[in-house]
Image 1 (cartoon, rainbow, N blue to C red):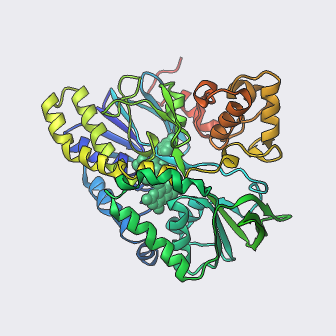
Image 2 (tube, protein in one colour):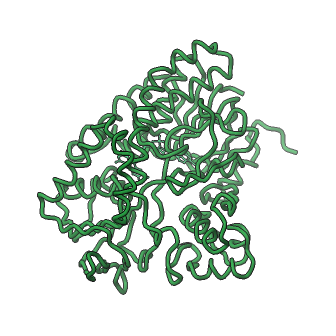
Image 3 (cartoon, rainbow, N blue to C red):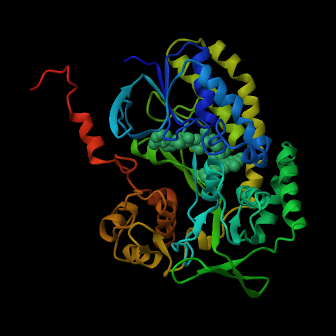
Length: 465
Ligand SMILES: Cc1cc2nc3c(=O)[nH]c(=O)nc-3n(C[C@H](O)[C@H](O)[C@H](O)COP(=O)(O)OP(=O)(O)OC[C@H]3O[C@@H](n4cnc5c(N)ncnc54)[C@H](O)[C@@H]3O)c2cc1C
């Protein structure tokens, strides 16, 4: 083994873990499938067009010094590198330039972040319908925005943020269609006092709402029965709000119902997970240092639980200190003392979470859609077919996959996993924790066969068998 620590993911969690590890003298390699450090929030921050960076503002630019320090840190950086397998002995298999290679270290930090929750509604598979985050990725990476009118539907801070960013970029926002049920406001009230500990978030939220109202963007709340209309592609969003049916013409419909931890890698590694009923998602079980149920594997950032970029940064530091301690590079008291500021930052960031989780809890029809809605986009399996599988005796997602092909496509159930678990839970009358999740197998994402074969090809110096 030539490294002490492997980090997967160069978002705020992975970058701060790498910087902490480097400062402690750990020989570290950081792998990320993106061409540059930054993760979701700071995507492309070191190479972004100056006009776009001004539009994205100071929250985005916060990532630049992190990414620049990382480049000078001495950490071995392997960008454009997709990790497609990690064995339980912590051997990481990754692909760079269509060639696979393996690397192993006694400590591994997975900082693979979050993904947007699927928003299965009628018509969501039409061209022109995307997640709101996808539109933001196009803006950050290519400076490109939709040309026609855009409707944004769903709920959560990222929905409002993307709406404001598109508006600032000159896009016609034809409407915001919020789906959060009105009862969410009452459910969030008891958490409001704690949320006041992070007034900056509340102010940001109010500022975004004000920006959209001032621009005269039509705004609908507690909307339901969403249908994307269109023959060849999205043409309009139809929905019910305020007791009336509405129709907003749009060439692009952006959906968003919050983000959830990306647990594909932790599932692949068979570590223990818990169902988080506040975030309606799985999260890996961790100790205070990000350690999972598998010794040596730590998880930091939104891949552990959704808490935002500043919390991810702090959690990365804590996980790296945990790794250094496990390798006897720090004593208990050195580790605890160094973790102090990061722990305080983490606690502060976490105080607003219960408020946001309650306020933006998605409506039940997003997690358990109507029978005729496609839930598995890869294999075109509907919610009704999943319910039928339960009635025929399937007890969980893996049996359902076997008999219906739901979740068997190239995304390996990344999109439909949470929906299928919740549909089955409703149908079987069991909590999601008992229903379970898809078993994930390598490769985590599709890779070319030649890349797989490159692992078995002996290097020219190796003797032929
Ligand atoms: C699409 C999207 C857009 C978002 N935009 C914003 C925003 O504008 N503002 C905001 O406050 N929050 C945003 N968020 C929330 C935000 O992701 C987090 O709060 C923050 O970025 C979490 O940091 P992280 O380090 O945990 O993970 P991330 O920043 O998500 O970083 C994870 C990194 O892991 C890499 N990775 C994942 N799997 C693999 C693999 N198998 N092999 C190699 N590399 C891998 C990814 O390429 C990524 O760079 C967004 C979330 C999403 C899903």
